[in-house]
Length: 294
Image 1 (cartoon, helix red, strand yellow):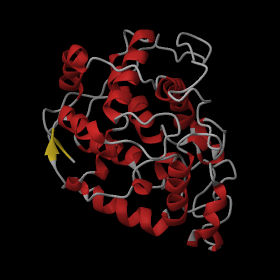
Image 2 (cartoon, rainbow, N blue to C red):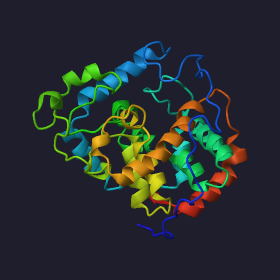
Image 3 (cartoon, one colour):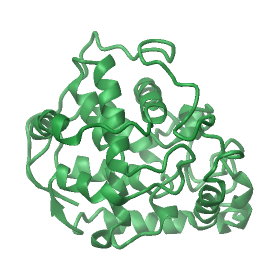
Image 4 (tube, helix red, strand yellow):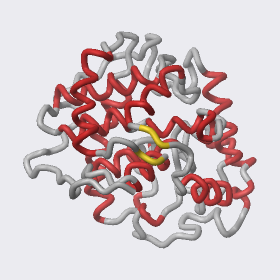
């Protein structure tokens, strides 16, 4: 891989803000409904079916096999911005809050966090690229079904926590009744650290592998945020805390900060792509090589 400069560090005076600070959380989503409403969403049938397939098919063996395949980073070679443009027509079928193309969600998140954290350019770029792993849906990457690309993530290899959305569908997952995988710790040990935990396969872990494998200089907090931003059972419900170590708990603060921009910045008001593109291209150049292996 192409090496870039040494990894950036988070400034000491950069403190994650509480949910009540800075960013104003809107009352409703793009459809005028509550955010993450999995019962009354106008997209309910699409969203629920995506999670049904996800929960049935995301087994430990599937994740291990798929992760090993995509860790080769031999599917494509392209720039960050080229990957962004691939998502121009992609609509996330697990998202009850928005049916806009993903490029707009990325820019909305980045622009919202840029306003509140003007000096943390690594955080602006993290917001821009956090969902780029969704290129997995594209034919260049094997046209994976959406249940293997999007949605909340959870550990495999241990019991599925009750806080996971649409938990009832796990009963059809082969791991649900496997004694090796259906206990609280399963194959893991308490405090082992999330780095040693296999997560359900999707865009989060893939983009983490792409960034790390291509020698990004983004700080560890950025990589953690990319890898676990969809791990809602952990950062929203407090589940699986017993698997975390001290470094995980420190980085969790940034995931929780980032989450409100990821979730609540979704809007039908579009960002002018050409207007903001030069700024984000400068950040890409700072933290990534020109071309990446995917």
